[in-house]
Image 1 (cartoon, rainbow, N blue to C red):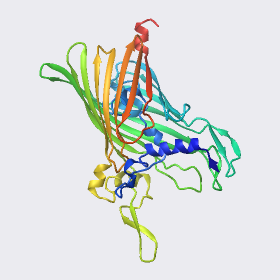
Image 2: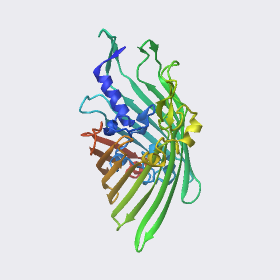
Image 3: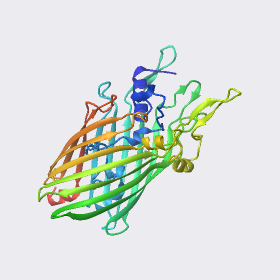
Image 4: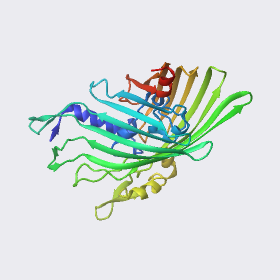
Length: 391
């Protein structure tokens, strides 16, 4: 099959997100990690997206499902939901985007449940054969549905378990190079913990928090029985957050997320005396999921120094006035040999009655980014506020 320019561009950007096409690709040290379904790593909500793509230890909100579902145990509201939308490749097309819907419900003071739907659309794409004859117009897409159970493990700590179904239908059953294709499917799980404690910095009230999450741990995914299987973007995320309450109305929050993919680092290869290609440095990438989670911490062919370059970091700050007006900023860093994604983020939020509307904007500092020159938004609805407002 021959695919039109539009789908090629879209798939290239997906690979870019997955750290394959970096500015440093001409460097001999480039060794980016690739996985299937990288849309699972896209920051889906505007609050986190405006704070450098962080959220593992920030205060609980309606979109905590993606970052750390354990935070729902400490959320103030009884129940609520959010709707988020992130346009994708806006400078190229208008029909590619990520939609995200979440909901949560506190069973009691000790436990809660939550769920979400993430839908990534590649828009309308025309498939043609090698002679350019149209084979029909399709709408490739990927989605994930998940549900979580959250429980307090103590006065200041909680934990969560999330189950996720993933469906990636990029070719819609088309035959590619003589090989029939199917939708890739997988089952995955997240495990997370969250710690929060009110403190004082001298006479100033504040809060310290810490979160950790292992996400997308599941079976490998394939788009055909005859093709190799690929790892899901299994990721370990952890970080702290510090809130300072200046007075009754003003507060600042400073947060950081540190991430590492729990999948094999590609080894380097060489030819042996018989002309066969063999591994020169590193480990065989064909491993089980369980083995990959443990060995991913020490399998980089460049040793410890390369292993440290595989951590990517987001930092963010949020100013809140009377819990009704928010201004946010952040920075995301990834080493140039591992993807070279570096960008600033900005955003704001406004709470009116029962609704909170958040916006975010991304400014790349190195390579182009599919979210640049794009305004993302999240709408949060709080049922407790609705009751108090008699809605």
